[in-house]
Image 1 (cartoon, rainbow, N blue to C red):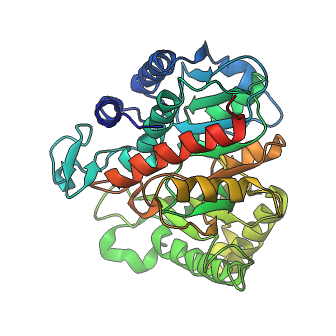
Image 2 (cartoon, helix red, strand yellow):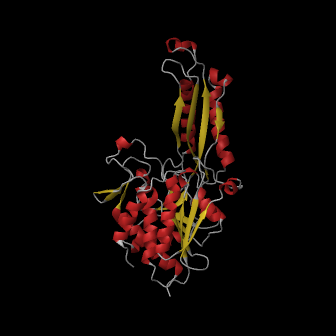
Image 3 (cartoon, helix red, strand yellow):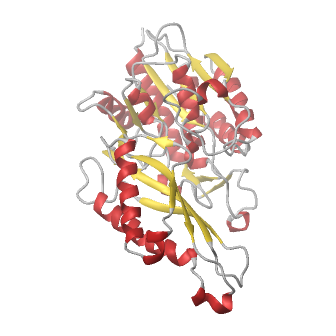
Length: 405
């Protein structure tokens, strides 16, 4: 089997040109591109408009953090019957941030330097998507005993709506590999995460008389100290296959004040809270709420004016491959056959769509080009060599799992 390198490069340039931030028109448009590419690769394509009202009222709806008025699903299948393998990749990206910080003016135009492709989504995870498509091209002439499927999904960055919709529509399979960046390893377990919002109130006054008011910023610092203590206690002695600090707690947004010479009387903080394997959302939220309440109780102002805690956005449950499942060895063997260094089984400190397939009874791992350290970053990039080797590994895995007559 051979990977068409010219087609692979053309695809990465085309797909990154879509500024498919969650909720944007481009998130819709890039799914049409995926549907066309899968059809060109010889797959039977289901390209459908998501019934957002129906999905949002489902009991296990995963949540969203952006506004969507329209969304589409895409699933390509190589033939009739239940697929022996699903390859999954998301096409939504996070915003590029400060454009002036990028080495190149346009983060949606691919630049190749030093064996790397640069661009928003190059690592997370459009390189994985084009590697899946390249694998489908590579096995097109094989007479497979069983079919494989490719799921391209939206909304992974803010909850997992796209994969949820594909499963809700009945698209299933024996096993799944998600082409998320894994830095050469195989992710067999994910932590989960929740998005929290804290509203902290103070008492406004003129900046020259700040000691007669109460700064909501200073009161948030009290709560933040309590949250850091919670993070430290929850990350002590993590289990295998997780490394150190696998479920961090991070404040990502702080909004406070409306005038430079006024003591701010309102602060809103939002962040990410890691969930441990086997931990329910209820238990995790309770531990967080107790830590906030304890910190507030030890402060004279916050004891009388307690902060408001809510949980907006996506709910990412933990997930893992069943102990001893042969999918892990199969992906390892495919990676080695593709010339990649020997991968290790690791746990990831972030949530992903792995937990949705696992909850549906589909054994799932992640293996894909790039490193999560480069995801969401300025000058996001992915090694070209890894994209090619992952494409070959996926093609090898398709042949092994689906069988060749």
